[in-house]
Image (tube, rainbow over all chains, first blue to last red; front, side, top):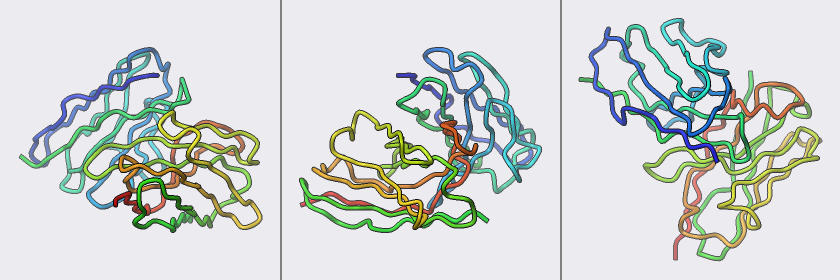
Length: 108
Length: 122
């Protein structure tokens, strides 16, 4: 099973700052990694798929990078609506499909 | 637009059963694989099961294998999850999720329902 480890667990930033979230896989997932945003009380929303492709309707301030075992989600300038929990997910080596434990982006 | 609406959650005793449904609309249901993903209270996301668009293949997480069954009725555009031998650790919000690419098993979850809560407690 591919274990995904996200860091940091919590990221405290002010609006306008740059956010960098990390996801490390226990073995290669090539490029087959996605990022989701989940706000309190809501379903997750797809942000990025295959490491760097933005999903439909996702603002350009969200970008993804990485390959192999190390991946990054970057929010270039955090907006108030971006404070949420972010999950990475791999689809390369499955079943099982696995998620990271999440990074909470909170207002500083 | 894509809409997924789950139903069937509730409170059930340990050892009991429940059937969840996910009604789909806004896309050609017959051409997309579907998944169930769950989230225990205050916890992260856990993949539960996948079914191919034509129902020909199913895959399960080890934690539910032999107890849960995923199925679909393409004529009714509905996805199901039969939950048997329920345990307290199965308590979670259960989401259905559509995959991105037609006909494949890509498991990029591009659309999610709002979820239905299953509580296993005596």
